[in-house]
Image (cartoon, rainbow, N blue to C red; front, side, top):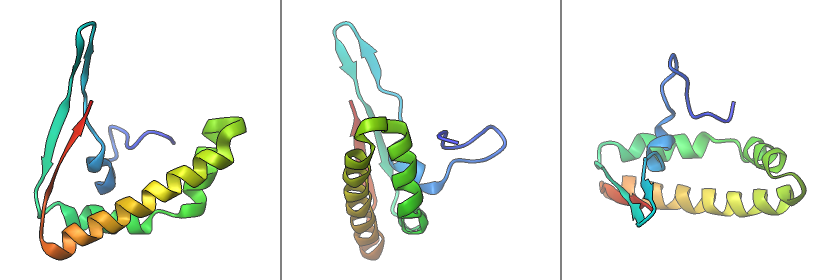
Length: 101
């Protein structure tokens, strides 16, 4: 399923890196800003490491159709960057703040 979770199933830890609800208005947007505490980071970093690159690439390719291969390559580059970033945060005992919108 493309959904991160169902009502019966909690979201994977890595989903907490990107969840948010910015508000889009006619006058612009109101961004979503969230902080992840240092205690949350190790579980997210570990979850990113167990994602199967081949499965991610297949799902992206199916979703993107003709541009699937290019999109999968792009997605996997960003996944690797996210893995490195979150692993470094976990190693250093740091949290993070992110903004969507």
